[in-house]
Length: 118
Image 1 (cartoon, rainbow, N blue to C red):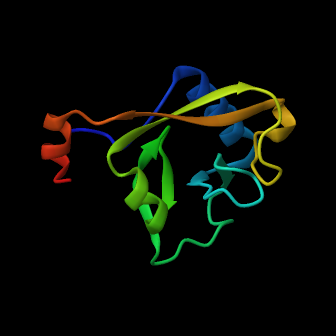
Image 2: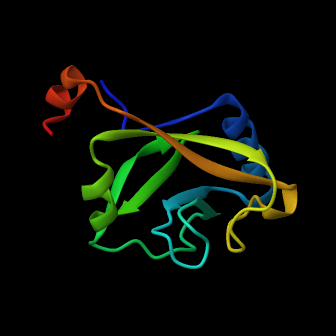
């Protein structure tokens, strides 16, 4: 099955570290306000998920959401969550670690789009 969101090994290691510090986590792909368009990491339940949010999948056993409007724009791509050095979003948990999560992407192949029904 094609995954809508995947994670690099480096990002997975940071997720595991953050889990040991903060407990269960959740991600929401920011829509560009305040913190740019970064994947934001929160303690599970910290951000209220509504009817206009889409669960794309899980990375490191952690749910990953995106707003429906943004999903409609990105639905033809697979999101690849990575981590780089530097400060990320001020509300995201990885900030004190001197790293930030980063979304990379690739366009789904015609076969993957067919499998996903898009």
